[in-house]
Image 1: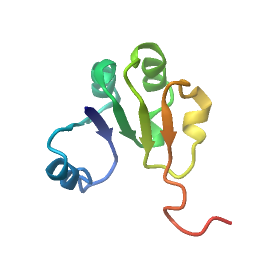
Image 2: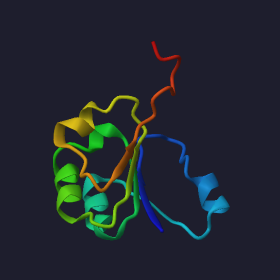
Image 3: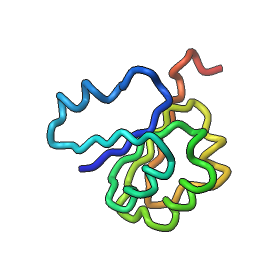
Length: 102
């Protein structure tokens, strides 16, 4: 399984997962272009919402047939609903991360 992640954090949150799941290929992307160049053989994408609209969304709709899950580090989904997520991809956000839902 291949997971690409592009998260705007100083500390890499995936490092513990690498040790716990050596059978998963974790790829840290530094740019949208890097994600796009590898999206065709990716199973899981973890990405902040601000990186999704535009080129990345277009690439996912066009060539991400293997992609099965997008996990966003964002609480809101606005950036994903704007350009849409293909029906074959499960989408998860970080709802509840910062407090009680009103």
